[in-house]
Image (cartoon, rainbow, N blue to C red; front, top):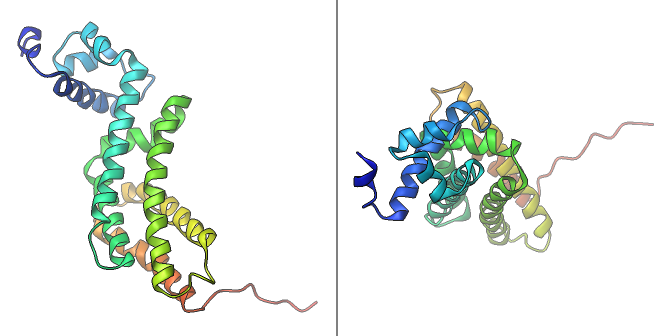
Amino acid sequence: MTDKRRRRLPRSVREQEIIDAALGVFSKRGYRAAVVDEIADLAGISKPMVYLYLGSKEGLFIACVRRESQRLAAAFREAAQAGDSPEQRLWAGLGAFFAFVAEHRDSWVVLHRQAPEQGEAIAQEIADARRSVMAEVNGLVRDGITKGGEADRLGEQEADFVAHALVGAADSLTDWMERHPGEPPERVTVRLMNVMWVGMRNVLVGEVWVPPQHDA
C-alpha cells in the first residue's frame, strides 16, 4: 500500500498501525537498537510520517507502553467483574492476566523487561497501570475480608499487603511461564490461587503461622 492510499486512513487507525509495528521492533531489538526506519517500513509509511504522528522514538515507545499497559489492566478489570464472590473474581482476573502475557509476548517483553530500564516518563506509564491493577486486587481482597467477617481484625493494611504480594507474585511468575512454555495460563492461575488465596482463607478463620519459640 502506498503512502498516497494510506493518507485516507483516519489518524487513529494510522497511529495504531504504527504502534503495532513499533511494538514488534522494540520487542525484538530492544529500545536502544531499534531504528525508526524499520518501524516505518513495517508500518508501510515514510519515516517523516512516523515522526509527524508520534514525535520521536521515545514517543513511539511511550505510546507502546501506554497502549499495552492499558490493555493489560483492562483485561484484568473486565474479567474480574465476573463471578459471584471475591475469590471467583480474583481467579478470573488473574486468569486474564496470565492469558494476556501468554498471547501477547511482544507486549510483555516491552512492558516487563524493557520499559523499567527507560526514563521517568516511561516508568510513570508502567506505575499508572500497576496502580490500576493493584487497586482492583486490593478491592477484591478487602471484599474477601469483609465477607469473611474479619473486617475488624484484618484492616486496610492487611488487604494492601496481600494485594502487593499477589501482584508481585503474578509478575514474577511470567518469567517462570517463559521457562515452562507448556504450562497453560489456567494452570498457573490455579497454582497461584492455591498458594495465595488458600493461605488467606486460613488467616480469615484465625489460623496463622507464628515463629517457633527457642528456649533461652
